[in-house]
Image (tube, rainbow, N blue to C red; front, side, top):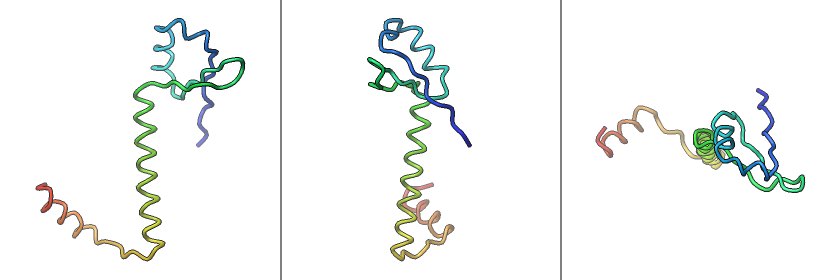
Length: 91
């Protein structure tokens, strides 16, 4: 799956805040703000930020589980695990 490249905007375009907010809201990718041709900041909608953050958290949990498995951790039985969580947290 190929992701689209980020949008690039020069810093002087930040003067039109309503247009920038609209661009952020509609953009499926982060927007790189440049100054003198160099990247200085990144802007994105809250929705895009939340999606990216959730993916990073999921990847971190998966990697932690893989590292545990590499260290020889015994796999947990799914039903037993869920039952223990229900008992512990009242679900």
